[in-house]
Structures are given as C-alpha cells and as structure tokens.
Image 1 (spheres, rainbow, N blue to C red):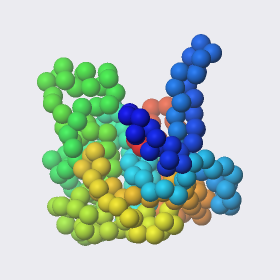
Image 2 (cartoon, rainbow, N blue to C red):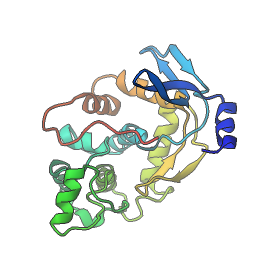
Image 3 (cartoon, rainbow, N blue to C red):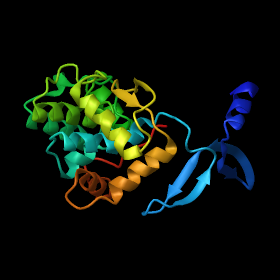
Image 4 (cartoon, rainbow, N blue to C red):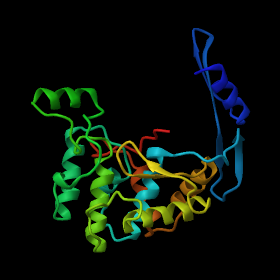
Length: 245
C-alpha cells in the first residue's frame, strides 16, 4: 500500500481494530470500522466509522438466504446451511449442491457462477488428480447459486439470467438487504467474485441485519437462517458463512 493510500485510510476514520504480535513484537497493525450491537439494538462498541458504505461480499449470504426463503425456497438442515455459506469444495459439500439442484429438477449445468477449484487444498488436489478442471460446482459459492436456482423454480420465475440485477430473484434480495440493514436501497451494485450481484451496505447496517436475523421469532425465514448458521456438527455438509470483506 502506498503512503497516499495509507493516509487516505487514516483520513477515512479507520481505527486500529487488531494487532498481530509475534515474539512480543507488534508485527502488523490492522485498521478498520466496526460496531457491536446488543440484542435490543443498543450500541455496545464502535470503532472508526461503521456508517461508511462498503461491499460485504460473502458476509451477505445469510441475508440473501432470508430473501430466498421468503420467495418460496424450501430448504432446511445442511442444505440451507450450504445456501448460507462459502464451502470448501469437499465431497459432502458437492453432494449437497447436487441435492439442492436435483430437488428443483436441475443439475450442475444450470449453475452460472464463476468456475474455480475447491478451496480446501486436499479436495482441490484430489479433484485435479482425478482429471477434473475448474467448475462452477466446486466454486465456493455454488451452494448459494444452487439455492438461487431452486428459488426461481419455487417462485415460478425463469431461472435463465438469474444473476441479472433486474431479475425478480435479485430484486427480492435487494429489497431484503434494504429492509434488514436499515440502510435503505443499496447505493451501489457491483458483481461479486462468484458472478452474482453484490449490493452495498454499511458495517452498522450489516450488524443490524444480523441482529434482526438472530432475534427473529421462531418459524420466520430469519429464524431458520439463524438456526442453521449457529449449529456446528461433526460431518456437517456446510461450514458457517465465510466473510470475504
């Protein structure tokens, strides 16, 4: 990072949020923006300027999953966890993605996310040694994309072009982001690494969205997502969502 870039970050109000210490020496210092909310929404901690706009990347997956459940997606258990998560491409993850697709009468050829090798090093090595190349199935967001396709089928929407920002699916996601974050209509829209639309929010808005998800009444889409993200079991088909911010 150039001196100009560092100065710009400091001028943006970013504060020290973490230090890496090795052998008693501070090896690196990380600046950023954060906010911590209580279950009732009270602000417990603030650093930097968490009202700044940013792109939440894979941290937005639980919010996207809420939008899909509201639109008719019928997933639960480990398959819903896959829809909320960035997976590592292990055999159980790939099997889960195929199950989501099959349940909607689709297959991996319908996936339109960016091809990639599994994130897990051992899984990637095994995949390549078996003579395979990068595929949409093995890319870490294929669970979310499979769920997006299944949502289109459930809602009666054409699943072709499901990634387009004006597709009914993405309009539903955009509205849910605006509602749960409390930030209003996203100020910016770009394309995430997996090819899906990425809507902006603020760190404070993302915290509000997570608070609303984890405190939602039983039986609501938010409660269903919170339950799957909170559970960790040996052999689960999907880990918790992996932020890439």
